[in-house]
Image (cartoon, rainbow, N blue to C red; front, side, top):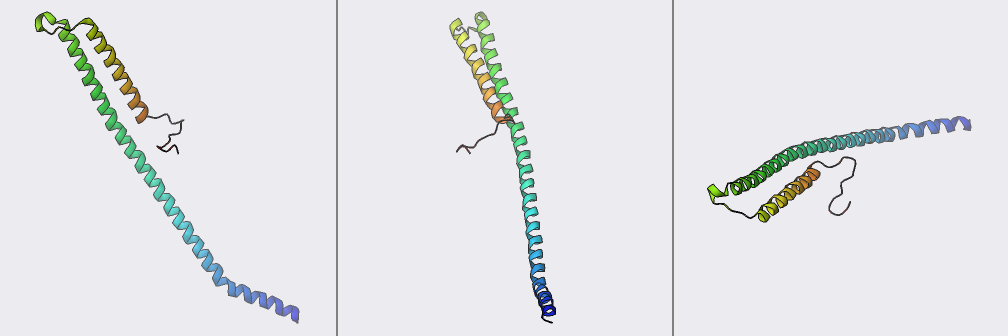
Length: 133
């Protein structure tokens, strides 16, 4: 008889714990839902950030292209005016022209290199923040 009482008591404990298990299962499902919601929001934020980066890259690439075009056009104008020095009375020594052409060329190439590597980084190398993390 005592052996029959033990299973009934265990069954009664299982019935008493059943609402707790249902609550636990409900809480677990709710937490899983919240986690999925947060992961979805994170993914949406990352996509938004990538789109913003693309738009900024387009804008800055266009601006740097215009700047370089104006810079080179200005250099070309100075060289042309210097070559027509008889008509324009714009006389510049050869050393000044060489320095102007050389430094402008290096500045344009350097600026282009810096901006291009900042706007279009190598995807294989990890980017670090200001504090090195």
